[in-house]
Image (cartoon, rainbow over all chains, first blue to last red; front, side):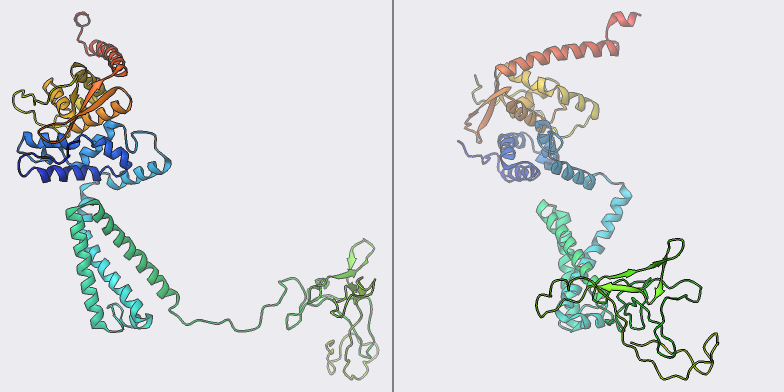
Length: 346
Length: 135
């Protein structure tokens, strides 16, 4: 098989090769086999075209990109020309949106802002790198100037170098325009943008002093259950008179005239308390204190309980301490001003 | 059957053409019939790509793009309508010649009928029939 290197007039070889490679590059969406088959005859064709006229190949045949596109379209290959997978269609859609012709004003605006982005990109990169190497405090203190190892002068030098490199990359990528270079430029832009955003987030999240929640733990129960001052649930109330006699069947009402009924129905350690209520003449429950209750005993670590011990046991009144009080005046309707009602303790 | 490698000189070399310079309409129409045109050229003689492009342009289809012809050739070959073989050239790169096979001839025949029907319809529609104009 003859070599595919062209042997046309001096000066055309490199042009044909360049054109061919460029066309090949624009066939990226095809598999290697497909692309190779497609451009199999192209070298000789390009050589004859180049030899037939003094005009450069681009003038005669159009741009390599257009050539490749027309080639794929007429060959029935590539996105859209044949049934394509969902992923291919998505990629084609993205490419179409990206490369759709834009209004001239937008194009001009983009072109003008692009160098500004190159500068910003370099400055951001230097700022992030310098900040990481200098520690957050040093970086924040010197803001908005970049620092390197805490040194602002070094930071400015780093910034200048980064900006220069970024501008150079941007210029070269947009001028020479090879696909790989353009992709590298885009990748660098995305990387710098992402890292800068992440760094910004980090700085702001940890900027202030950390406040530790002080105070007591919230009560274990939410609204609706009687609790004491420390948040312990109240499951029963034992009313005593001044003489230390436990009263029974006492109906309790709050300041709004509502009966007190929202006692806890389990112990602090979670064992359920069963309350047996009286019912009134209409069949409604009556909460008469002290409530008659039973509860499972606590599990004993000393070994298996005797049979029957697991059954609920009645709740016994607690031991209380009645403060010494002078006897109340007989027939009094409320507490005398000199002797306030003592709280029940226990 | 293949041509020996002598470049046919048919007057000034026709300029290879990229995207259409004469407007969209004829280009779009031609895309639809390029298959038939290429098959017809290959039917006369086995030919290689550059030669086919040149022939089409000489015959009057000067809008046709090189890339379109090449893509069409590959597609027709992949569809089994063309045979191909390589002829080494003393001038440089080898050339791939295309020829019609049985399937290609059938396809060309069907294309002839299709074109005839389409052309007749368009003639009538566009008023190229004398009998129509007389009305």
